Image (cartoon, rainbow, N blue to C red; front, side):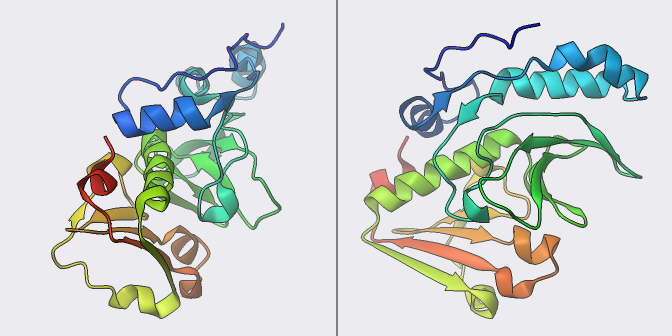
Length: 220
């Protein structure tokens, strides 16, 4: 069976913010994606529940084949968003890959039993409550870099001393381990996934985007 035909011009999926939809449509491209359903019978024969296969197919239908610019952390994130065969994360449930890494790394990217987007090292660590949140975070980072007057990178223990008083969480990124915070003239991205997933507190990192006006803070 041939791979599913897909236009090379992506359309921002429904449910994203206008900022993220523009990001997908302007900065992203679509490549041919694997037809997950052609593996259905073989996977069922391996004991994979039909509901999990349907979940993989739904991800592939929404995100499969989408190429986005590199993320500012996690060595850029998945090269291409693409699902593959689920595996059992006993006792939590089933997960499946979210796309191959851009470089050789100590972990991969996966969708967890509850649909969260995360990293899978010696344990699974959710970053965002869904893939929409991961894409929203990429869009917000690209927007903030473009409009900020200053960008400050903070690492290790210094991240814990950041004062978030007066800041509010940015809800659209669906933050779990990773979060974004919006203040009166700045945005802060907190990347905790590697520190938690690899038991490596030195990997804590925050990016502070300063000098933003109202458009810079929101961007749609």
